[in-house]
Image (tube, rainbow, N blue to C red; front, side, top):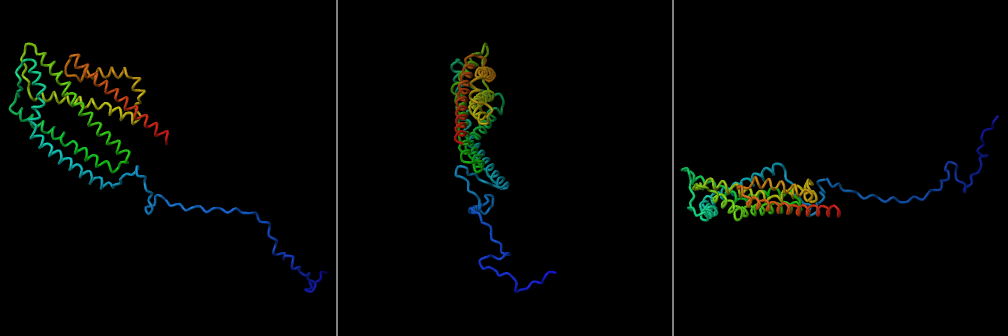
Length: 304
């Protein structure tokens, strides 16, 4: 029979010995302090927008603001064209006298009467009005291009602004160079051949038909002179490379020959060779432009 526990028989506790309920703690391992992670501020929060670099700064506009800006630029361009047309109508007769000089010179060299005619009662006034409208567009073109630039520039980065401005100025320069080439070089050869090939007939040159012809020649050459700009755009989008253009040079000459035969308004070989030579030089210039674009792109990829 078990005896009841006597409180006097309880074992004495050693003060140096810990109580059983309080077990000795295990030897703790050294814990390395964990560095606190810095707080990150969300870049997308409107309170703390992350600033863009200076060279990557572009404007942001709402859709309604775009419409208001477009309306403003269209109105400014229309006003500029209207003012240009008024100026063009006031000087169109004088300008046509300047445009008629190659024709009158060709008649003089062929020992013919230096005179242009019109074959309908409204022929002269129709020519003056048409020429005045064209002159108005040409006069207002810098203002129109400037309005287009003001509309697209806020949405572009700085490097894109430089590229677009270079594109616009180079396109205008090449177009004017083509018009100048047509007026001073191509047109005299064309008219000399056409007037010299008169046979037993006496030419009566209508001012309206003459204006239509020189308009086609000058505008056509102005567009043809945009060939380096076209090659620049194709290279920029990776469609062609300078190696591809150079390897297919003989095929390009074949295409240039066909285009020269179609564009040349006369069947003589001299004018056709002149057109071929000019387009070949433009093609070679386009290869140089393509090489510069590719080299700049490779440098950017190597540095990036």
